[in-house]
Image 1 (cartoon, rainbow, N blue to C red):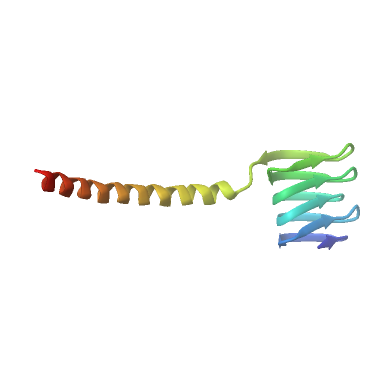
Image 2: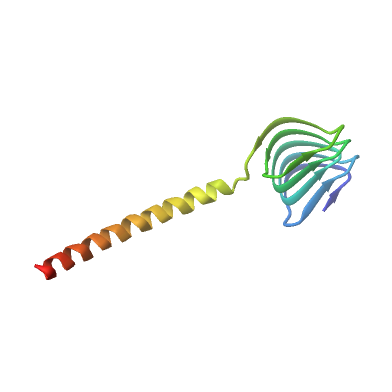
Length: 117
């Protein structure tokens, strides 16, 4: 997807999103790869983010791969990808499974102890 004009709102793309030198985006972007050569303001969630020489970004970038070329500017905060939220939910589910397994193993251990007596 290539943006040459002004977009305000939420953009979701499973591929790459490019904001050209004449493009401006205000809102939230979720994409595999985001290339900023224009102006971006908001939250960006991407595997890879590149801010090119004419690019200006302001807000929060959630990415593990950020590149800012000479001349590009970024004002805001960078955070790891939001997948951590999913991992923590999965970890909680795994913890619950582990606790359930432990309870089941305790019951088996008690049965085994009573058989060995």
